[in-house]
Amino acid sequence: MSLESHTPENADSSPAPPVIPQATPQATQCATELMETIPAVMQFIRTEMRGQNAALLSVPQFRVLGFLNRHPNSSLSEVAEHLGVTRATASAMTDRLVQRGFLSRIDDPQKRRQVMLNLTEVGSNQLQQSRGKTRDTIAELMQPLTEEQLLSLSAGLAILRKVFDSVESEPAS
Image 1 (tube, rainbow, N blue to C red):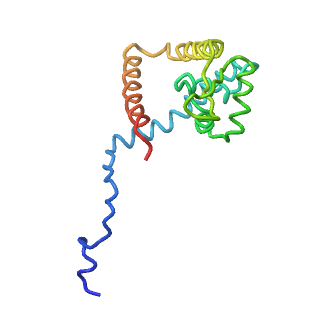
Image 2: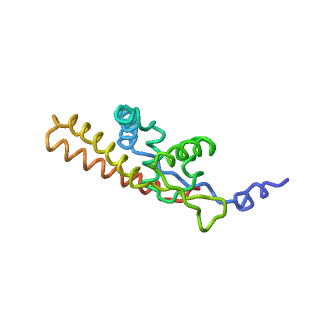
Image 3: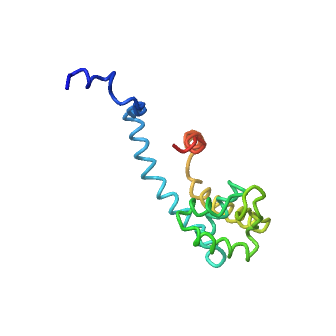
């Protein structure tokens, strides 16, 4: 075998993997802080929502309402994927929400044997009421912050949302 057969010109013709730029130390530090902060914030929100909805909705049921608020006409498979559960589990959960009047189910005119799930007015009202109470509790916690701190936090969150909205809208690879 000659050396020529091992040259890059004769190498596998598949495209090279994309080069991912190395994160700056500031970006790495920010990512670390984000990963340490977001779970604490989400735990607070979950606890608050659970306290408000203890007799009415479980946290996974509340997550279904939130998902369908952002993604109307979703399929059962999409709900299951969002929750990280099986279709059977998602089906049982959505059945209970339909029975209680929080969700509606309509046949998908494009796909046989598939339904589209949507919030009803009752489900939307429950979601907005729970979010409003939680928002008010968080606002009370933030009351001691200065106006400058609140503006800075709002600006940072807007930037963060923009970063992650762009990732969410990209097609899966």
